[in-house]
Image (cartoon, rainbow, N blue to C red; front, top):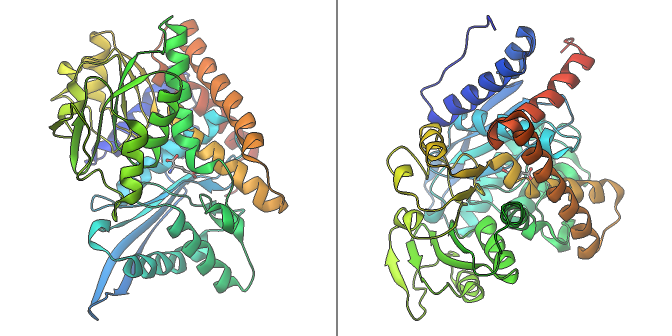
Length: 425
Ligand code: GLU
């Protein structure tokens, strides 16, 4: 490989680039393709002037990055978080390209977001922010160009506002411009639970492959949002024991097992959907980081990037890490964990149930014909299960870690598409 490698001060982007270059080199990808795929096709920054509830005006920064449209429309969520910036979106957008490719769905990858603290915003401020964001990115999104979805701190309400704004601007309904909408407004039965369900499938399949009975297996779940909760519910249904959970309000540890249904009800009754005030017998409070290190067989980080890093990886007791979040294990931690013999199911395989579910929603939107939840899950479960085994078998056959195996498989499909389509644009 003789291309000049791009680097970044942004840890997530630097990691994404390193992972890409490492796999590209190993598979002998030609330089031109490396140059193309190491850059996003399009990145935009938008400023979003919002009238706050007190009458003052604040201008927020928003972004949308389309990493690749080689396999289909760019696909990926938009998030609300103080750390959002263009480089984070670029990194996460490239991860979406690999995720959609690996999943075998007809999409490229993208990501967006707004730098803000959503906990400080009222519902009406959130609505104005979302509608302004939609209006600013309107020229580059569409059901056949770029299809956003929920991500960190965004969900069904934001998707409706987004869809409604785009539809009003265009003077025609465009339900497929965004996925993750509520069921009553062109959403799909099954989509809400899809990401968590997919993570849980990977955990169960991993345990099965290792001949460990899921019944009684102890699991730590960091992040009690859409991914963490449905992951936990599905695991508990299979007989696993979720011993620790966490959100921005801290960690909650019960060696005998968290009452997952109760913790789920708790956030649904909390005005900000937080675990704050959650109680049950035997509960020990600790920090969100401390729960990562408690005794358990499986750790499933389902919150933000960088949760498992050089500082804490050495102290992780779990033998299996299944990444529900995007980028929760840093490369330094990856190396430390490999030394310790910890197996990791990488993010863009483990959490791909979300985007596969989004694909199902989009297909239904384009057809105007809706599936039952059973039909939805009957399609999702075999795809997730098969994808997991494809990556695990590839890793075994080529004696590489699952993350590297997933990159090799994913890059190949995108590179082939770029090659076939050529370089006109
Ligand atoms: N935000 C989710 C992810 O990172 C879902 C993306 C989508 O459905 O487009 O995979």
